[in-house]
Image: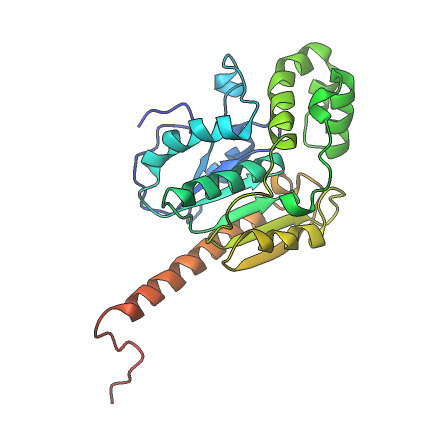
Length: 267
């Protein structure tokens, strides 16, 4: 099915569990391209947001509610099978908010993965990065890493990406994610062991957003560890956690069938 929201033209139903991926502020779906080239038990589907890459002519979305109003109907046709959500940095907020909206509509993810981002309850007073000058925003991005130096050093190149970057920071900084229903799906929080913006304690705090189980794991690297040398290990961890959750669900459903005596021995 042709859609501007996903890379390629994925079929409505996949034979593998789907993983919808949301990048950091100003980032594009191509950030997850290396995962598409790796053999995986998952159907990785990076999400393309307006205002970048092939959608650069479209205005970027500046509020979480407005983005969800667009995202939900765009992705629902692809949710008939098992699916999980993963977001990195500001993208983690999008993935979490989307999971909450989907659960309100009866579609529960297998698992939510949040990376390099503190939960709403522990992120403190939101900064106003979206109000900074272009030069000041470039300084923030230098501190985070992950943005090509050539872009940061070239005012014309930076001006091309700045609308999406500024909009994503505005979306994140004006989002009141600490209000709303708890999720029921399990949550996994990942963080870079050298990331000054999200440490182990903040990552573990994601357990408070769900009534389900939660896990926390650190990987070598800074804020953008997800796209560095730890990339393959992160993808393997995601696949293992999704597989474990699906196996557990299958076993529970089997044991609930009327007349099932799966634990009985036959002598």
